[in-house]
Image 1 (tube, rainbow over the protein chains, first blue to last red):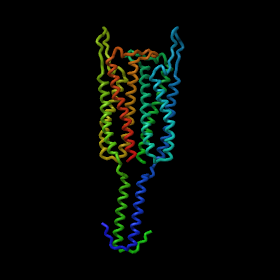
Image 2: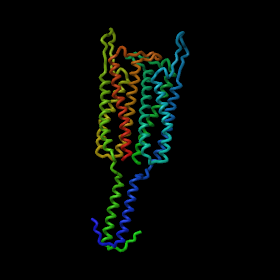
Image 3: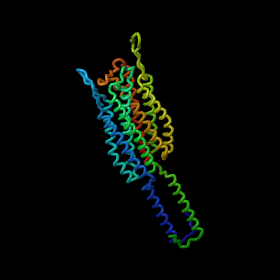
Image 4: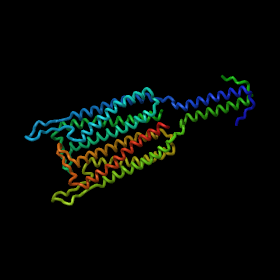
Length: 204
Length: 204
């Protein structure tokens, strides 16, 4: 298709040069593949705020559950009635899971700040999505296992002959029920964070 | 910079036409922004296989838990000893959660097939990551709540005066313990699927 109607040699050379420059520009643009991601900075800032919120929620849950104990004001000759969170292994798991998620959230703040500075980062976002997912599963597991036991403590179960213990340990029950709130709030926040990360990744 | 050394008018016109075509091509390429994503097709196929595996796992869990009941071979005048999954609300939640995840997985197969065909799709991948995350949380909640109760059924809890019921209902206990496997396997598969989706998204 190179049908040039005999332009002078010099003009032909100029045109070649222009075309070469244009091709190089395209190549450079494709190599860096970094069209300025619109709004990714805003998403990264929201992500940072959400991480702090989730951190406070899970930290609150950990402390509330970890410091729960109740000693009843009466006792027999043999036994003093006392309830602590680590009487029930599920609650111990809850505290451990929440502590791990807390620690992870502190570390992930660094990556979140990094994303504000470099809003086009891809690999770090993929890593963050994966670890957020794992932590979400851990948090959901801890919170819902504890919720199952709290439900049992409130209602008991006639078929299995498990009695509700909340009538005796009323304060204890209120405290452990309340400590679930921060954890379930954290789950919702994690979902939103993963969604935001995915949106930011699709814009990179 | 348009210093053309007087080429003939006709040739100038041809060159303009060529440049216009080239500009249009670049514009089209930038508009679709779809440089052929390497390996995304392979990832989409693995994703489809994993979805089928997760579907089988959660379906197995649902059926195993949902059909569990045991009637003990002895009974008193007033009561026949019988254990069913829906005696314990947590197990009902487990069955419901697994059913929902099963239904979602069937629907998501369509999107997964769509990703094999169009390996550069972005928005559908973001949607899939979000719903996978929600379903992962639901599955983890159901599985770990059930696990907490199964643990209690096996070990009991001296502090709360809850006795282990597995000595009486041995078959029932084995069955419900086994039905957790598919669900926990499903959780791991979900995590891998979300990671693969994020990797594919970063390559789009």
